[in-house]
Image (cartoon, rainbow over all chains, first blue to last red; front, side):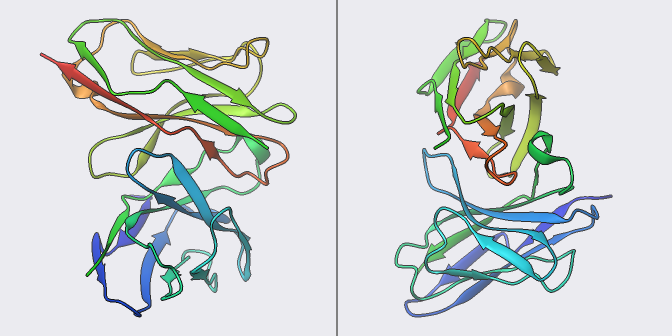
Length: 115
Length: 113
């Protein structure tokens, strides 16, 4: 089955610790995205990548970093500089060639909690 | 910049009631419009979309019409079921946003038997 997988489902971070969230897709999509969701709010874009080895900051990139070394993978690192990391993190992908009409497909999410 | 305003929730309805969730937008150019649904503890699923004015998106009994004159994309369903209980997000993708989605804040729907 084609789709997007995210792991782990739950992640706990200690003060001063960097943690990495995994996102893998087997849809052969060029574009991938990371969003943050806080309770009662919409999704906010952290980073996106339109092609391998290239990525762009979204609206709330501070305290986060990404890499895109393979088409299928777009891991997100939450660094110690992110002072309020507790949130639900969603990864998405899209074909990358259809412009504004593209549908983004979402993974099941990772919930990050601070100890 | 682009923005989406959604009807505030939560919304509670009885089974078989009529549903409307309002969505209005501000965007440059000619955006595409989307409704996504999120079930508890899960990611978002595309419910329906419309890519140009007067298009109607539909899926699973839900409908929404792209109204450029009122910059709206209201979600409707004639008869809701308990299984429709979820959070619904309106979103747009505009020509100036490199395929980024701009989301509304979401509307929690609870359907009671």
